[in-house]
Length: 137
Image (tube, rainbow, N blue to C red; front, side, top):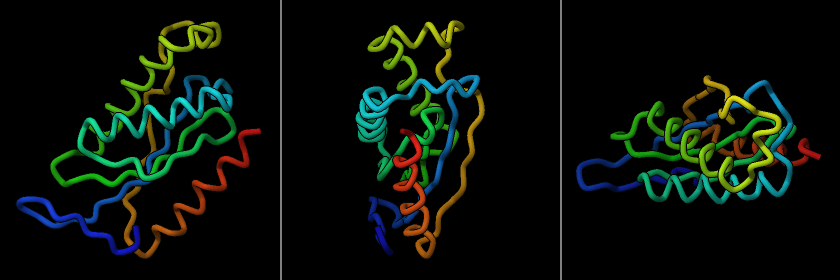
């Protein structure tokens, strides 16, 4: 994604975010099978909602790192709402066993971390996210 500009009808942009959020109560429920399904869901959600989830990894089975590229018309708040809301609902439906650890019906903590990523630090963030998969075992 180095110096990749997206050409839209009315603008040219390169807007990237590093977004991190945690499982409620930091429960270590994102085991490899669930994490793999989560990756699929997050990429699908991005496609449907008009942004790109370029990479994502689960860290320590209790939090998620995503590298997201989005047009200027979609706020980071909206992106997080889509990613957390839709994925949480879908994972609860597909993996009812999650309710044993998260009995109040919420998979994700209410907060998140976000930073904007310039093209010079993109590679560093992607390497950092890639290393997260080594932490989940």
